[in-house]
Image (cartoon, rainbow, N blue to C red; front, side, top):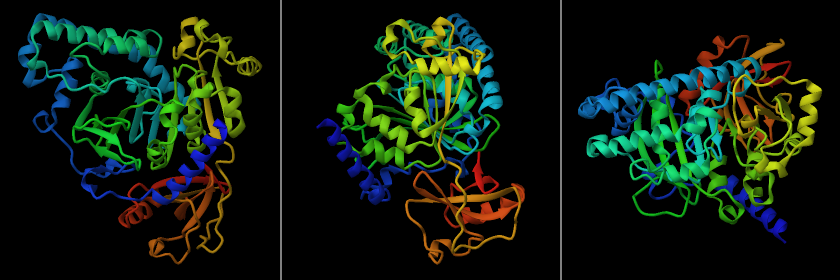
Amino acid sequence: MKKNTLLTIFIISSFFICCNNNTKSDAENLFIDNNQQDSTSETIYLNQSELPPANDVARFLAGKSVDKFSNQQSTAFYQDYAIKAQQQWADLKSKTLEPIKEWCNNNIPDFSNDTTTLFYPFGGPDLVFAFAFFPNETNYILQGLENPGSLTMPDQLTEQQTREYLDSLLYSYRYINKYGFFVASHMRDDFKNITLNGTIHLILYTLAMENCLITSYQDVYINEKGVLTVSDGKPVKHPYGYKITFVKDGESKQRSIVYLRMDSSNPSLSGKFEFPFFVNSYKNKICYLKSASYLLQGGEFSIIQKIITEQFDRILQDESGLAYARVKKDFDVSIFGTYTRPMKVFSYFKQEDLKRDLQLKNSKPLPFKIGYASQINESVLMACTRKGIYPTSNSNNYAQSDINQDTIYKVQFKVSWNIISPTDPMLEGIPDVDYYTDNSSYKYTAGCKKSEAECAQILQLVRSKGFSDAFIVKFANGKRIR
């Protein structure tokens, strides 16, 4: 009975996703375009006075000077804190974050080349590892049970409150520094502090340590149509949290972080479509699963498991995410690291097939600690790519370039659930329109050039016609490559 109910829910959900994805509310001015590419913004903030208060708070937490908080920063306690905070980050960076980035470049460089949005279910405030594995994304979406929290202004705290606030922040990083994950139960206790009251403080700290400028901060929620909506301050039952836009040091491209407080279990998602709608609205997305408590390997989280396995073509995870046997059904899986067993508390979720395949591969340990098994000096990563993700391009009834070579470059500009007529007005003036199929959708491209540089003008043209999130893709022997 339950299985039939879930199936019915997702059939209905899929229908409404296709039909209602472009529906707008009368309160349109309160809505945020989920798939908006903030890189198109021309607003670049150049000094602290033009930035929102969240940027000042972030710098304060990172031990960096802020004119507004100069009195608080002049104390001996704060100066000692600043040294500790910078040293803590330097240790994390040298021992974990930099090895991760080097490993990714050597082993899975294609995983972030053409994705623009990272979904991190069960990630809580772990922006640290999201940045480490996926430094180039435009959108970062983190989800957890932890309270989003609110801004704490240091100049409104007593000296004792400031001490407690900053000590609590450093303390909250104890597990991420040692093992590479946050402990949910510990975070719940940490966030009971009146000043360190949610994930926002750890997110701001990470952004400032990564030398990012925060350009906006908004409280948001997902409405029933899956649209990210600016909060009016009233309580909501939908997933809610905040959105931060920011610019990385040395760049002009604006990016965004959305943190959502939500329960991903079946009782909370059953019969509610806002989250599937929300996920579906983002294109070119990848899912990251780490320290997920093996929730996706049990029956109580089958709905979000279905969302992940059906809506994402790329997944990077440790052994606590989707079961190895499950992802092998639909994905080509590359495995890395060492594994013999899960932690004792999760012994029920032992995966003998993963252990066997790693041994057959003679896999070597990862050069960094990550996930639960790091406590027993083991760590595993699975890089999953949906099977058949690089099908041969289809060009019937569309213009065909005379280029015939092994490697070509095109501009991808549109994803559709249905075939678009070659005479459709939206295609007018776009050269060499073509498409290829990918996970039951049609991905439309323009141009056909020998080099990426030659596609630059086509990219500009396509974007001028309203396809602002268009990007250049590469094909080899008729197949899309990353």
